Length: 196
Length: 175
Image 1 (tube, rainbow over the protein chains, first blue to last red):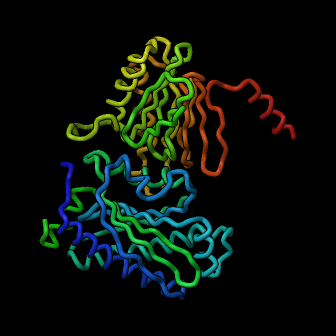
Image 2 (cartoon, rainbow over the protein chains, first blue to last red):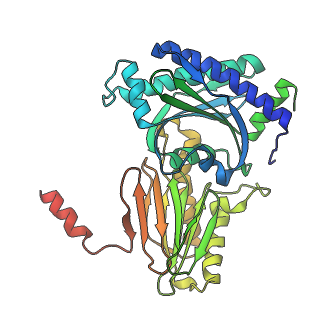
Image 3 (tube, each protein chain N blue to C red):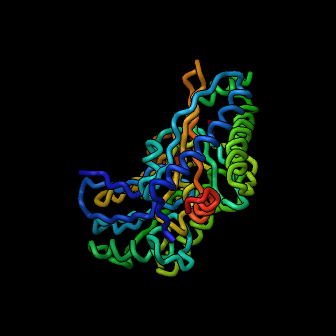
């Protein structure tokens, strides 16, 4: 069941990612009180072995916020930001970056941003998507990304990555946003868009 | 003298002096090292999931039930003696504990690799597994030294056990 996608399908997924990320950046902007820019989103199918390097150097220290998604499209949403950008986000929220609340504040940011991304997808496709509470970890990029990919590895050697970056204006701070659906799930997404 | 990167679902073996088998940033996956130190042979497998469960159309070596026998075969093909094999396990962490469910893969991976090793009568001589931290593992075939590093940390020798490890720890505890 190793799925490949044609250009039309990848374009459709890109468009979905664009709308999802647009919605997500609006909520992030509302929470932080700053304008948030978006990079053009990308949809890529990469061999599982290369997926980590596609995202970044495996040993880079990074903060990840993960949301599990159940429902019609089981997947994992992973938001990645550098520890210094995580500190900037905390400061914008009026928190000391080292305080005990920092981790839960980041989790909450992930929750709101991830949920608005998913709401946009659900609204467009009619899929029922239920996010689970966020989990936050700061560790090696490879460790976080491979753990997310591992849960999808049983049925495919490829990883479908929908990613986009949100950039907080005036702070030089960016959040990379990744949605990793399993292949059956992305198939469902494409069916709903009429390009399966 | 080169680093061989062993990525998700890959495995590698070597007996070349100066070689280093490396897996960067293990999370829930297991880095399994097999060594015949006398013969200077080492192998490293990057195990992603416990069992193939009938998924035959994908790379089988990402699953513990296929990766462990294959790694044994590869190191023995390079001259390792099967009864002399020593195993070292790294990884199997729970990176996002709160998500639960699908994220418990780490513990299941560790159990599956251990069961495969037990079935092959290979003893695990050292391990750095579980917990919630990512790890990088390096092994040199000629030296037989296994190094492990956590995020932001330094390489620490996991195997063979270092002689001065115990006294150092005792001194810290006294202080």
